[in-house]
Image (tube, rainbow, N blue to C red; front, side, top):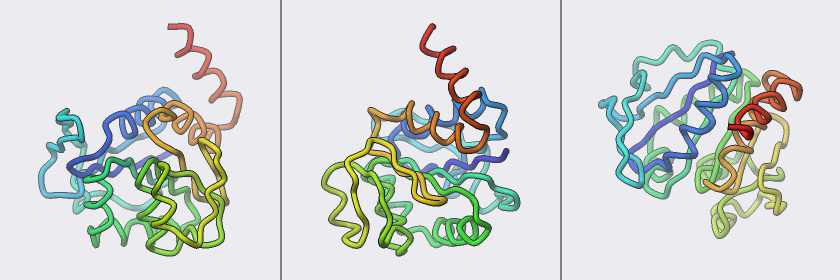
Length: 181
């Protein structure tokens, strides 16, 4: 399985790195992709991460899940990025999963992908997606869209993505392993 996690300056660190960790434990090929022209991306809390690849150099074929972490400034940058929008469109057109957490579901909402769909987001961001239905669930799946409330559910978000890609048995096994540590 191929997972791509988009990083923009101001991203919420746990919302990107926790799913990356869980998916790598599951055996996925995970690419951290910077949406700028610098692989060094600084998160909302001053932690700088070195991306694996620039979005402009990313092999976009065969993506099984595209993940958008939140963080206010990171979400704004994702929303303003033409390359991000094109990659989201390509992923949706391929019928692959698109996952967004915290403020990032608003990127999908502004593109119309969450219209008349159930979703989760950071409280207050539902106003950015007036045609979506915020269910109150911490993590919500509606067709190919996986959305989650925020940093506090990063683990559940990563495990839900893993479950959808690999099945409940492996997701449960990883959950058990990391909760024992």
